[in-house]
Length: 207
Ligand code: ITT
Image (cartoon, rainbow, N blue to C red; front, side, top):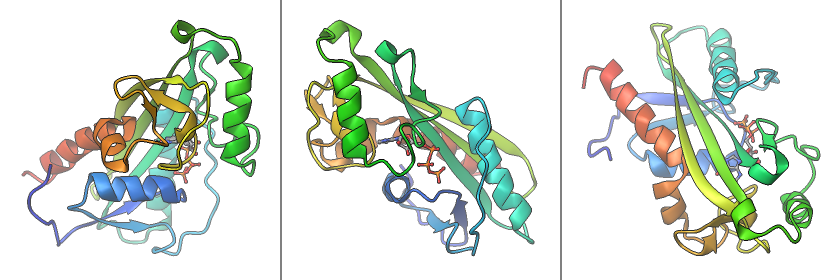
């Protein structure tokens, strides 16, 4: 991806999710990402949109309203897991599904149990990631990435975060929990959306 270090520029990543932050940093290593904590933002952001893109825009706008100076690009990720057999749920509600504080080991097992006896061809699932960008001139853009998989028969592995132990990636015959993070970060919803976002950033900067 990038070959030169963009040292004169940082990006504010509007997330409180450490798993996302780690992946974003690894996928786009040439940017300097600062977090909500780094800028002293501790407010609650009401993610009341009806699409991933709307929610990602709500997050970047919350940071824009908080910042006095607008001298850095603001980025947000809104993402989720859509399970065909559950009519696309949990979708945009993935973080709050079964309660924010419910451990993912419990959420993952509940989904596997809900699909007990469901054959391979009906176990389709996908991760979706919308990235929103808000540039210092106030302009906004969104991009989306999709990562197709299946609900595993058994949760496996400890890599990644969230639903990864039950997200089966057919091309590798493993769950995201088992796959090395470099592989996930090459093919994932987040990797695809961030690759598109990187192009938009470069275009905005005239590179
Ligand atoms: P921020 O809003 O602070 O960024 P969040 O976790 O609340 O963090 P979202 O509202 O976008 O973020 O919810 C995304 C949820 O979707 C996330 O918490 C996971 O449950 C799930 N998810 C998204 N991408 C994932 C991935 O790559 N691996 C595992 N789970 C993922």
